[in-house]
Length: 488
Image (cartoon, rainbow, N blue to C red; front, side, top):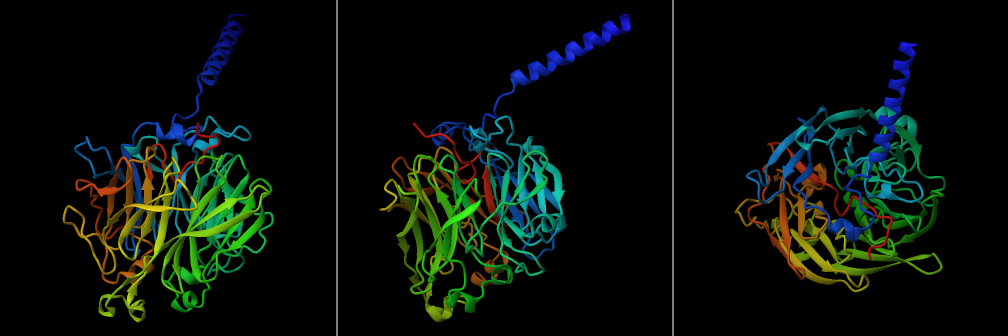
């Protein structure tokens, strides 16, 4: 009798505790219903930056960087997570969960922005890094390449996006040793167990290459882009393929829930390597941007604006062109000597959360451009920073040599700070910038009405032998989160 009474009391206590836990559950405070609300969130104090070993002599790593200007550690690496394997070549990474978790249809509102999903583009291995305590960040789980191959038929995982119902992972390779046994595509992972669920595509249409993707969640469509297949990028750019226009030059539109390709727009075969997709953050707006590395007819870089018509069809128009710069062949790498010019090489773009400024990394000429895209069909150059570059080799204001050129760019949620690194892809770095090396990460401040100014006090020293690629900011940034509600 006494024992039964105690057991009953314990059960009641457990039930009450469970009820209290459930009632106290709240969405992660870094999940924002709208882009406008995200802009009003706390200022980031930490950044997470990928480090890669280009010669595979060291394992790749994740650097936690202090970006708080009031701290004595400003611009310093305050923690590192070094992986157990070599040869991964880290490239793009993302969160297990973000603002898309607030979707009213299939949301997981009580998830936590806790894990970074880091794919190895060469190894096809995926690391899950627990950054709940950033200064004690550690490996939570490793997904071996054999599991990726077996469950998806894909290889070379590339871009991570946190969706309402799971983690979406784009790939650059199909099956087989060289990744050409079937087209690459997207697969989905469970956002809590990190189990690979399977391929995304039900009907892919003509899509046979892959690169980036993003979506408009309430409008239920996705946009994807193309780079090239593994033999076209792993050992460096294949000049013959470039001049023959054999790299990707189309963007694909998908019914997000049906997982079918509903339209493909060819940007023109001369517009080689259609890379980053940046839709407007406010889901009411049905347009976005795509960066093109090079036009083979004139070496220009280009930005296309794409938009959705009232009848549901899509169109795209070239709205920005960036000219190459004449150069002495003696100052150029072997690959470019015959052109006597430096192409801008548009290798990354990013859009501020208010959909006002588009940042364009010109990796070849060593420039970061800032365009006012308030009118997305008529962008206007608002600011520019010169640093690095194949010929210019412009130094940082602190006097340091900036290897390569501006590459992966990330914007703070409030739009006041722009961070970037310098490495594109190890073999491409070596082709376009032979003899150079070393990681760099810098920051520019944004003026009240546009303009960019490099912060002379922000310079990150990375360990010897590493290069730096993508950046993620504490609490989310402008290429991480997708929003389910309008900005009002």
